[in-house]
Length: 613
Image 1 (cartoon, rainbow, N blue to C red):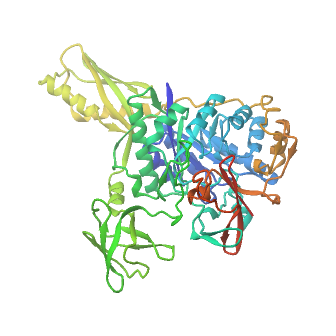
Image 2 (cartoon, rainbow, N blue to C red; image 1 turned 135 degrees about the horizontal axis):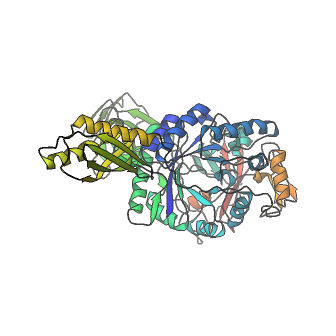
Image 3 (cartoon, rainbow, N blue to C red; image 1 turned 180 degrees about the horizontal axis):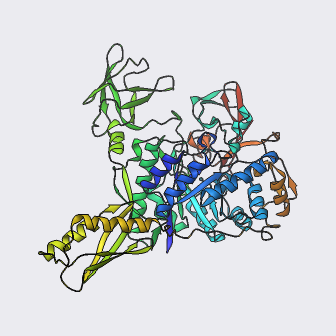
């Protein structure tokens, strides 16, 4: 039976545990170094503790080692790999082919997953990476369902796809804008997020077409309603972006997507990638945590309105417009958009000021459609108001944490003063516990049967017990609640001493010969991100006839700093294909920011936009 895995991000161990409690089947997290989010590193002891917790439910922990590496870092990276293995992780997410070479030549026991930083967007690229021995490919976000199906038809390894969270405007792993501007490489985990900056758009004559907009900033991904189609296309792991996000964000999104997957499984021939069911908790709502507005991007093979040009930050949910203001702009009356919204003291609000900047304020006193706050000079009549902190929702999440438990069925057998409890957990562990009952029969047999079911059928140590059957050769013995509770605790203790039987995860043998002369193109340009001798040798063995150094080592002249499916000209209604009767803007166009100018080139044949210095 095919598995569906919900893969959650974790900035740290505590967020990882929260994600598992809310229904994640797997968590990805960084170790101390070499993660593509430098600010989200963790000590190996934290990784070990997270693995220990996750494995109680058969959930998996994947560790990111997905930066490119320099020659003098390779030995440290190898020691890092060994530490990840010893901490109990289930797979390693990598970008640099030197990791593959070391894993192959030195003997490494964990499966390798090809990071989205490998820019996997064609069947040929997928076949090549599979031939190297990758067990899973994490596909480029800017793919359509048809492109995913084509990759699925070409390879047999697992496929992972992002379904929620922030979107890079550039093809993953091939953005060099941050490195060009500040010497901080996205491929080294230190991206300055230049795509979220504000730019002017000009033509060749210098005429400003758009002033001071976040022209490269995309909305966030949300494919909650498309999971079943993705599963049918061959995706087995649904990935949530957000290793820098807080616990509130991760819990909310994970719970929402976990419920969506459960609904699919209830009527389709799939199983979850881990065990246990989630009870209690809050009602999730992804509109109430960080987002820049949502898009399904290119999933249907059609371009839409993908940008959030006015504000690259999280605005929250739009609730209305400013209807009136007092003199010092500390008292607001709203006109609600659509149905009225219940506002509460302490709610956070945001709006776009007249100069294009994003401003925010707290509602000190909220009553109906009126808000009292500290003086906010940027407010104006007609400003669109968004709520980006819903205090009631945050309190509900804290007040109603999710609980995850493994189901256990118990069969109780009684015979002449003795009893035996046989327990089988949902992952297939079996234990039994013998006990003495004494000779006294229960006066009320039905009440005794009900009491056994009630007392045994409770929770203990992450297990939720239920009585499947009660078998007795004669009348049921009298047993008090304390004795029955002790039986349940004994069963939980014995089950806890056995490892959870995890579902299978693909683990391919790392290729030695199969990848040779199998590279899809013979010229390995700087976009292959080759930054060390081991990776260079692998590409030569694979058939590369010419190899350029990574952009981080040598800034090539005329290099593409970005290539993207997103197109500013299309977004602004200036595309000649989109509006053939309109006169297209002159090509190239330019982005201006803080004295720097970047050239936009439009590859209409491939329907892509290129950013150059």
